[in-house]
Image (cartoon, rainbow, N blue to C red; front, side, top):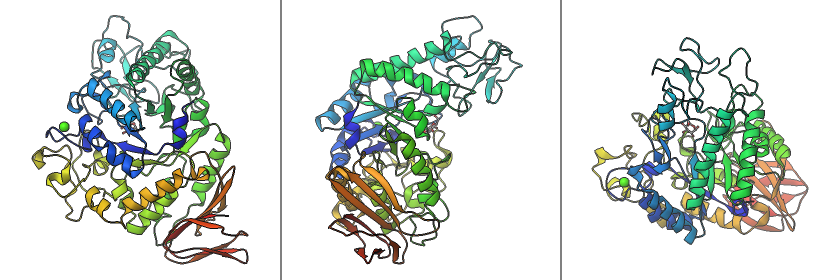
Length: 514
Ligand code: GLC
Ligand code: CA
């Protein structure tokens, strides 16, 4: 079991936009190496790199053309190996992004599978037996080659779905295979080879893209869980320390499949958006938000997964609005006090630590569409292109945030009151208290409908910490019988516990040992 995950604090790197060292306007592996110390200094000890493999980049690299070769724009396989080595030298770990559900249409597997003649890759993707028949319930690619059939797609139209079979194949549709059949099993074996390839090279595990939708017609995920259990056996035997984190959004299923941690997603049933990304987010100082539905769902998932693995609440990612689109200044600090005091390994999306903005009205880049605004280049300092690249600004992968007051890492480091320093402090506090770490237990003390504040107890063998968070501008209180023995962290003013009532000032947070 990957023990390191228990103390991991992740930093997500969108490689295109992080740091360009050869002036072509696109971030690269050397750029990541150059900034490992910056990430470490913030307190993060692990990184997740978005897909960096050969790709036509119709979906920013989530359309892989060769799983075992990096895209030349980032460097070579050797350079990526160096990223692993340099990270390990600093006691940091690296997750790559595995995209097992689909490939690009340019993948050699797909080119072979398009052929009318039967070959090794005929069953690698989901093809119907006739061009006139569409795969029910799925969009498809049709009329693209001599092969008589329609090929199911997974996401964009250029991302054909790899064939992991159907949970209950329809006997009337002979092209629907079972996940135990030869074709789907060969696909899984090929994906295990990909994992083996990178793990042997030194990567520490994977964030797995769309992990919950491999097997089709599988509404309860039973077939997909079975496949991941198979992968778990392979990993236990060959790479027991590899960490597996899923983009699934249903921790009861993914952890059963053998993942160590699952992300809460900005879509689906988690109510994650109620926190930071809706008209009245809970973390806004307007105080009109509601965290109760989020907490109810979280509690259910937590009970179902207790001690089996972790649930991760990310600060954001390359698919959603920047945290700072709806929250500002102290609101962001308070949001991070929550993110960094919850169980499960925290994930910080690059730039969120300095409050980088969502850049409005950008032209879509590489299938980003509205996501493009969250993918603009990292702002390092006040030099050309904010220190991201020395290329002419027209050559940048995505234009810089044009705002004159855009935050930078340099200014944030120089200002002791910055969001950056608050996050750094919160990470240090988390890492020095067992109860606040990923596996400390949580019990919600106060999380009422349409009410503030939010309070929860984090507990380990020797310690109980009460976390009280009040994003609203007004002081708030709730009934709770306890004595504060020590203030471990406070921001915006101290709460107090008297006569069985806890009172907390407006826009403040406190962690108290009780
Ligand atoms: C995931 C990725 C997203 C990508 C999609 C298709 O949701 O995070 O960026 O477009 O899968 O692979
Ligand atoms: Ca570059």
